[in-house]
Length: 136
Image 1: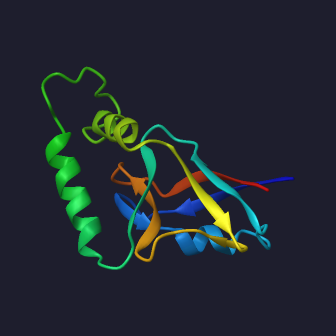
Image 2 (image 1 turned 135 degrees about the horizontal axis):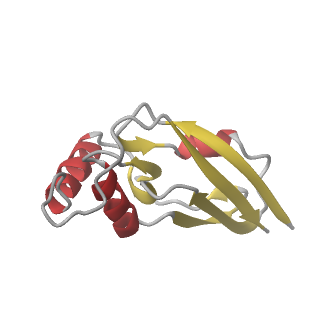
């Protein structure tokens, strides 16, 4: 059986937003065994799985990615949508736009400190669409 739903997540702008509970809130009972697949429908946002306990991880992600892919770099030609746009596309390609998590015993089979992040790379984006698919 396959269950699919599209949700909108409001981010209030740039950052690494922990959305594990938001995803779970949109799911009916999960199968005993299966797979959760998430896909963000945008070219300037990403999804990743990482530590969910210490908020400084989110700050370090942001700092590191901004240093790795800076704004206003002289090689960018795609600049009409602002200085955060091209770096957002590059960051989204580096992080990726999809994520899969196993389901075991009707729960996400995550590690103790793992959580799902929506990575928002634009300064002022407020809503991102995520397709949730559960395979059982």
